[in-house]
Length: 120
Length: 120
DNA sequence: TCAACAGTTGAACATATGTTCAAATATAAT
DNA sequence: ATTATATTTGAACATATGTTCAACTGTTGA
Image (cartoon, rainbow over all chains, first blue to last red; front, side, top):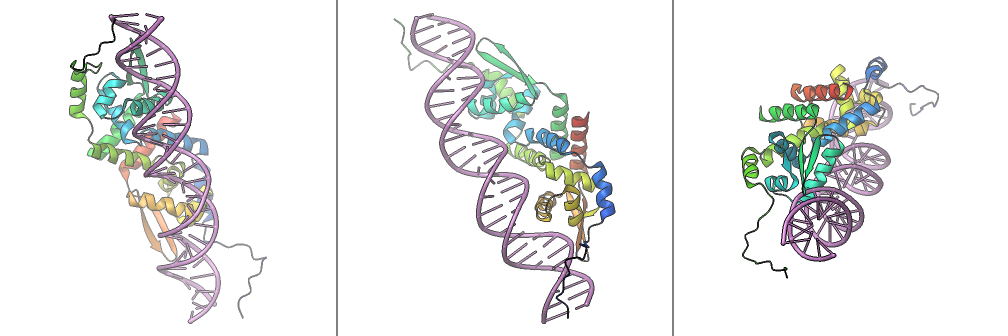
């Protein structure tokens, strides 16, 4: 007895098809979830968080930022490029210096929300 | 002429020491920036965002989540472990099933803030 | 014009991350 | 006990990420 497992039995699983269909209906699109994850990714690095924090205090040049974070100018510049690409910071050139400042209220708010959460 | 560069000249740089010291004084600690980046890291992945979204609608088992996201049960389970470790979700066992639901208001709020930002 | 300097960039490297596959648990039904 | 099912786990793999180093741009001042 037993051991028969007819190929024609339609796969009965524990999945609650009703729930699945209902949640699927309003699920984030792939585009949305990717865009959202990219937004959070910008804030998912200690160096960038420190840069954002510093720039939330005042406009600063690359050199000063490196001094404040105590890391290389190159490392700062690489991270600033990411923040620039995400339109999180803007910059202004004067003589040989490049001065950066925050440019995005939305993400700056997310940053502060997160900070409050961590410091609670 | 020129080409003299006395070794005794004290390194004069473009760094604005005053600004640097002032910002350094209130700078995020390394602990704070790491903890904060870890918080944002949880939200920095499309799969986890979809899981969080689904669980914000209703309590669901691993099987249903896999069905909703259309990815393998294993992938879901791995991500749920991360969410569990960060205390973002809680679970309840019933028979062979494990039902998950959201457990952290703070991060759920960050998620919603971010979603509003992206959808604006 | 040339040297010095602020900043950017690309390559190389190490590390972290997410997925898949296969194997291991755990629970329920026969 | 044995089998089936729901979930977890570990290893392997590919890809992404952040830092360093060296080379390069562009601007200033001699």
